[in-house]
Image (cartoon, rainbow, N blue to C red; front, top):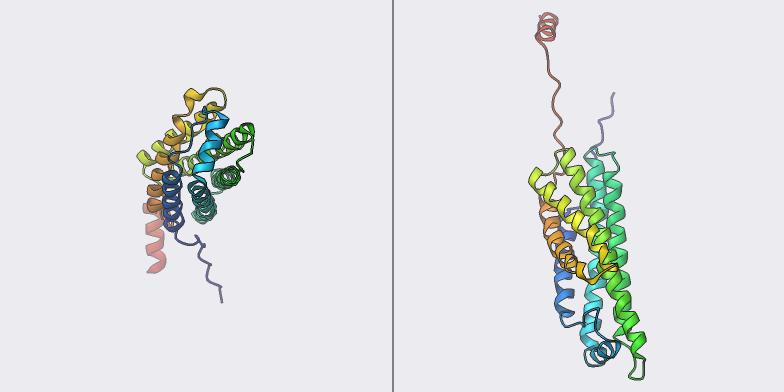
Length: 236
């Protein structure tokens, strides 16, 4: 008696954590829409923190909340790709990129929350330093990690035919933008790339989660005419 082959487990629904991440990301951006720019003075940052402490804490809460479904989505993506028979590094790159992006969002939320609780006698230099750390973690560091996640899914989806080719190529473009956004560390002129990868990449991830199949249809081996004849002779 033969034991039936176990069906590969592709994990829970992928779209749920991706949508949760997208909603929390939008909420965090809305809550932090008035945050001083990275080139603002320490005094301006300290003044904003004193006047908008509640908004800063809310934004940090939503930012931290968005890191959780992002990490879950990365884990489900990894498991889904493995269940689809992907053994190339793309699945591992997806997981590593998602974890790095989630850790970056967590650090950004921690620094932002700390900056929102500075006392009135705190120095402007401390306020500026905490704001810079929050920006670097939630900006360039997040963009690079998120770019790795997108690249892992896009390359795998393109080579294995798991995603529409147009969607896969768009994902590769967003992945490249995310990598280029790291140049923000060298010049503020590249900072405009950060919202491109954050919002554009998030929309792309929603579509990818909706279109990535749960099972992979394998092509049947072709049967030659000779094989058919021999099979017919045996049947007869």
